[in-house]
Length: 229
Ligand code: G3P
Ligand code: MG
Image (cartoon, rainbow, N blue to C red; front, top):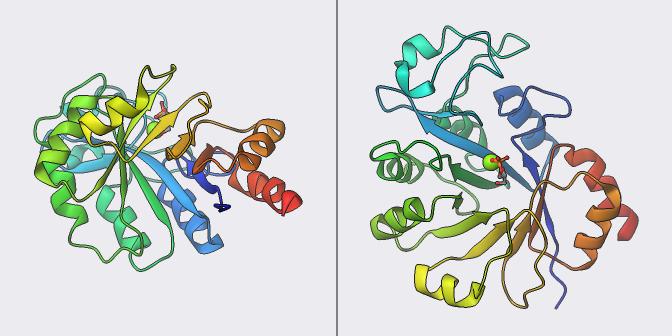
């Protein structure tokens, strides 16, 4: 059976909007993108917010770690075009009842945010989403904690290297898939590959029918996909 590879906007649509910004997410959802990938941290007062880095220095006019700010204080900073740092709730409000796959990355590989898994899972379950959220993390411990809280969800491990004995690991840790920086030929494993912006690589992966690719420029990837159809 031929499966369609889903094209995910990596951090939204960073080719056209600030990465992980609400305008980028909204544009992509209105366009009808297959899926969106985004990164979640917690503020000092436990509000899940969307940003890639642990610190706000690179993408806003502020400095310091997200976890050192209350949500109210964090909102005083701006992204490069004046937007504020989005919350998970704002993205879920946009995505509710829309045919978009959400890949929520727990950004817990450098900082452990106490209780982030419970806070996020509790929030997501209040929404009517067309597709179940795909949870991912480089931090296997986060996925294990999340699985204990809700074993019915899909948890995928992120890795920037080949995974040894991937099927054993997936079975042991109840993983629904692997999100890899390099394609590792594995039959019957849901593999999603990041970050694929080169049209030649996109073509190759689409032809392999991987489960998904993440790209910074999803409209270009869609053109590549249509050229293969
Ligand atoms: O989830 C794919 C990709 O986002 C993982 O790397 O560093 O961009 O979050 P990073
Ligand atoms: Mg990410």
